[in-house]
Image: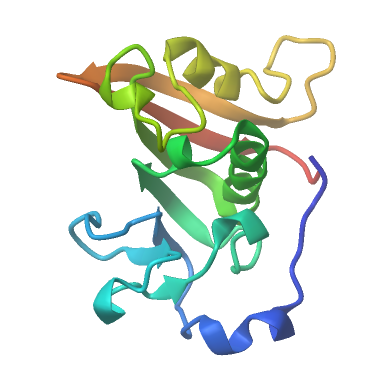
Length: 171
């Protein structure tokens, strides 16, 4: 994953002025996180979405601007190759020591296998995100990694993963 930066001119008129760092709710839709979160979604939700944007085009925010990122019932609606890009973008906009919480339906449940879901999530998928960058102790460790804090289930069908972003040096 290289350092991905976006020219501000291409989306300046679509993104409100923000005071960074922010808490970002990716794919908030009609069920946003309570509290002071910036909502990013392709659906304007009757004017409630702060940034109306297709995240398959990236996240239209500067590098390291978010102290916390949350996504719920969003990533399973994308093909795995798109999820890869979205995760790269979450990494890019996450500040060092930011937390990222991913909530998806477990792929082993009927809710996880709906026809509108293109990627299927289980504990191994969450672990794989944590192993994405070389972790401390590995020969190829470069100072950057998704530090997996916890994987848990909320019955009847939710799967959650909590990650801390560790950025030791520029990629």
